[in-house]
Length: 366
Image 1 (cartoon, helix red, strand yellow):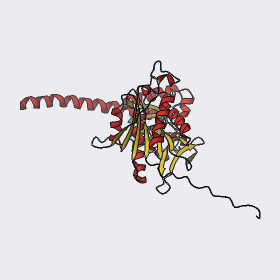
Image 2: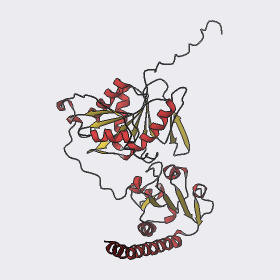
Image 3: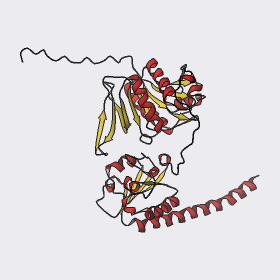
Image 4: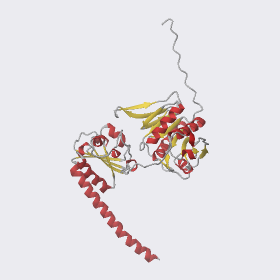
């Protein structure tokens, strides 16, 4: 219309001085959280697409060995911030340390693990840097032309996947759940650079003090389990999970659960698998009495082999399963446990029989 000037197009910011895909390697008492190594593998893949370096940031005190480990897991360059004030995780000093490194060396992408501390740290760093942050990403990819990070995460109770872009700010940041990406095997022959970054902050300037650290007592570690036996609504109650625990013990497996079972109070939250629980990647996942809603599938769909046991032949879990058994878990479960015990006992006997024979052969050869 006459009298109206055409709208001006926003000029794209110049981010040509931002390069590299980085991962924050969170640690406690000198031990790295596994999610850091998992993210290194994905960062390496994205860096190869973008034709840039993979970086890692290690913060703490006396943690140079973690910088060396990061190179083995795929880092080309590791930024090491080592100072006494950083010995224990506290939001203020760690956020200042990470922000200082980012402002100085300018990565285009920065990834954090979605641990309790990782979420806290990532939010504080994003605030200092005045950039965006995608929380709890489950899929990451990059556009080689625009160099934009596509960070996707489930929304609306897992019914939709949202892909979030950060076009106007750098670095592009995301947190990702443990277990979403596989960790690459460490390569002791890899070479990389360790850049020691000075950090000066007086202890008197830190607003919080760590008086003591009381580790949370964990009864199950699903993130590293190779085999998981999980139960859902079909288990009927705590008694059903008592039976399922026997199956898990017979298989040497960890015990998991769906959100419905946890909400009903049949089993503790630390066993929950799914969108609001843990993301797992075992070699074998046995879903017992679990219908398989998308919220649960998000947390276990990357298992190597999925066995579903359910009385409903139309349960959604069967579409995802490698093998499906239509039947009563209260009949099938005990049968699996019995057979597993038989096989383990036979294996133990065979091993015991081999040992004297091997010892006798070794004695006759001397």
